[in-house]
Image (spheres, rainbow over the protein chains, first blue to last red):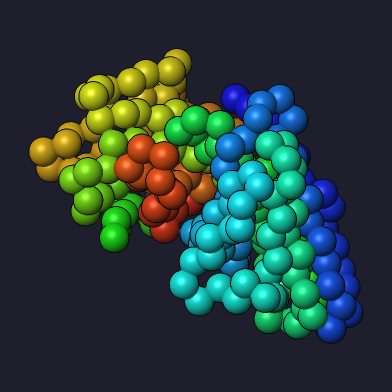
Length: 113
Length: 111
């Protein structure tokens, strides 16, 4: 399958700071990238869908001003968690889609102190 | 919107046995059904998928079956091995739309 990378794999930050997570499709051009959040022992919760060059579409209940998504190219999307708080601590996973299949990155563990 | 139910939530089998995980979906327009394997602390890995124009698909020890009339699909793993232990998620979508995931099945294969 296709390869999707995420950076960083884990990050610890202080409350009130911002954190940027990068998602890259390494061997294909992703027309669409997705950002998910996963709490322990739960399923994946879709946060937003982004297409290259256009604004992201956020799921209901996800604050677009808090979770900034940029999809600058067909191989790179970034998620910035602004003014992070302890309740934002979670496992954030991106996926990339060229056609119908979605390929997931390895995830980023965010811990906000 | 689409709703995907997955059962069982946990499944314990002995090495060499078969494992079956079942999912049902609500939207008859859904036409793409992938299965993902997620190991602890890692992202989901696509292991097999099926489209609505096919009733069954196999890849070595893994197979997926789809019953469009009943709106359910299943993952079958034969000759299970300890390295098959993970959480498995089913999902459904309509073409290029977003995936709706089941709640996951934790599979434990004991040596």
